[in-house]
Image (tube, rainbow over all chains, first blue to last red; front, side, top):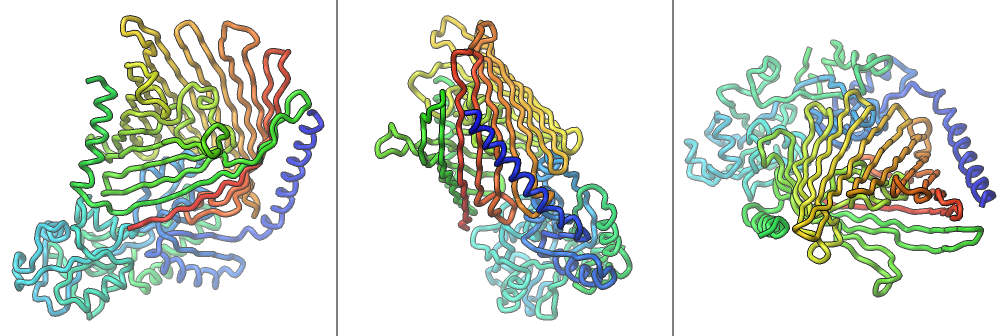
Length: 277
Length: 340
C-alpha cells in the first residue's frame, strides 16, 4: 500500500513540476492585456486597443465580447484583466469576486443614451417616462391613447440577455415585466430596422444607432443627444464600464488612462458614445 | 395541520398559481454526468475495482419573471441494488421569489431546497469526495422547507435562515418526526479573499411528542483566496443529547491555470472526524490529494469537461483497523441550453 501511495505522490509531483516548468515561457511575454465582456463597450475597446498598440508596440491587447456577465465572470476567474460592462456589477457577482480575492473597481469610460424611437411618419414627438412604462407594460395599447391615430402600438424590446434591456427595465419599467406579445429582438440594429419598416412601432436603441430613418422622441421634455446625456438632463442614460481588479496599476493603468485621455475620448465619440471627459 | 402539511400545501399552491399569473420567460435545461473509475484497497487486497456513473443530473430551471424562478433537479447514478442498476433521487424542486419580503437582494425559497449549512450548500466537488457534513451524515445537502436567503450590501457576504423538515431529501412521510429543524447561516467577506462564517441548526429529533431529544449542529467556515492559492477550512460539531461528535476539514487548492497555460488545479484535503468525543478509538481521518484538469470551460468559465483524479486514504483511530485506500478518476462533463 505504501508503494502505491509513493507511486501516486511521484506521479503527482512530476505532474506539478511539468506544469510549473511549462509556465515559465509565459512570464517572459507578460505585456499582455486581456479584455472580455459587453458587446456595447466592444467598439470602444477595439478601437482604443488598435490605437494603443500602435503607440505601445510591445503590448498585446486581446479583446473578446460575450456580454457583461461573461466579462465579469472572466475577471473573477482571472481569465481577463479588464471586464467590459454596460451595467453595474451585481451584488451576487461582487460577493463571488470578493470571495475569490478579487476587488472589482469600476472605471467609467463612456456614457450611452437609450433613445426611444418610432417610425418617421409617426406624428408624435414626445412621451413621458410614465407613459412609456404604461406602453411597455401593456396598459396603453393604442396610439390614440397618447394623442395619435387609432392604431395598435407595436411594442419592440431588446431580449432578456441584453444589457440595454436590463437598463431599460430598471430606468423605465421599474422592474415590471414587458407586455406579452412584445417583439423581443437580439440587437440594437434589429430594433432600428424593424421600427424603420413598421409604421406603428415603438422601440429603444443606443444613441450610436440613431439615424434619419427613425424618429427619436423627447423623454420628459428632453431630446436624446450627446450633450443631454453628458449633462445628465436626459434620464435614459447609462455609464459604460471597464472593470479592473482594484484600482488599475502598471500596464492596466496605462491603458485605462489612454481610454480616458483626449485621444481615447475622441474614439468614444467616434464610435457613437458619449465621452465622460 | 402540522408544519410539513402546511409546507406541502404552500409549495403546491405556488407551483399551481405561478403559471396562471405569468407566462414563463425562459427555461434553462442542463445536465451533468460523472463517469468514474474507482479502485479500492484494504489490508493489501483490492476490494473494489469498477467503472460507474458516479452521478448524473438533469436540471430544469424555469424563469417565470425577473422575480420568480424555479429549479427542478433529478439525480441518477449507478446503483447495484436498484432495478436495472440505476438509482434515482429527487434533489431539488423549489421556487425562488426575489424580494418577496421588502429586503434588498433577498429571496424566499420554498420546496425541496438547498440546506444552507456549513460548506454543503455551495460545495462544488473540488474533490470527488462529499463535503464533511454530508460525508459524516451530519446534515443533508437538500431538505424540504423554506428559507430566506440574501446578500449583504456591496458583496460583504450572505445570510440565510431556514425552517426545514430536518430529514433530508430521502424522507417526507415515513420515519419522520413531527418537529421542524431551524437553521441559520452567515458568511462575511470583510476584505477580498477572506471569508468567515458560521451555521447553526437545531431540531428536536424525538418521535414521542411527550419527550424531547435535542440535536444541535454548528459549523465554523473559513476560506482564504490569494492569487492562485486557496484554502477552505471547516470546524463541525454535532451535539445529539449526550453524544458530541466533532471534526474538521482543511482543503488547499493551487490554481495552476493562473500561473500557466494549463488549466489545472492541484487539490489536497484533510478530514478528521470523531463520532463520539467521550469514546476512544471511534475516530477516523481522511487525506486526499489530486488534481482537476479543466479540459473545456463554457463562456462564463464554468468547467464543461473536467478530469478529476483523487487518491484518498482513510485511517482509523482504532489500531486494529487497516487503512483504506481509494483511487478515483472521474470525467465530469456538463452542458446546458436556454429555451426562450
